[in-house]
Image (tube, rainbow, N blue to C red; front, side):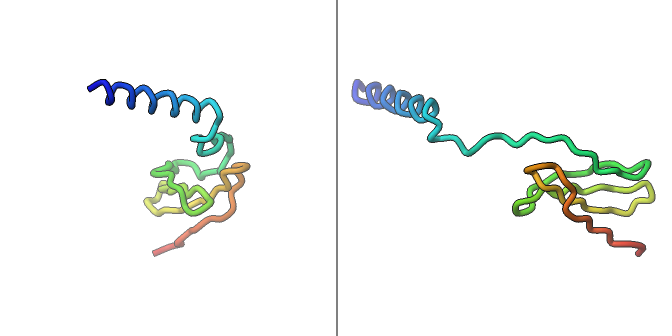
Length: 86
């Protein structure tokens, strides 16, 4: 039992050291603000990672959909998928 307690403290100390040194860090959190310019009545349904971009699925007021791709480094819209009329 004493060995488990010592091992547990060792794990905690090593993890605290890693976090303080930044070794366990996956990188800085990306924060940006952008304006997509959605049409009136449109609403954002989902936001998901798509490779190195963010995909924003939008439902328009007429029920059709559109997907905007954003660059997470600066918030710029890099592409739009518009299926057009059905």
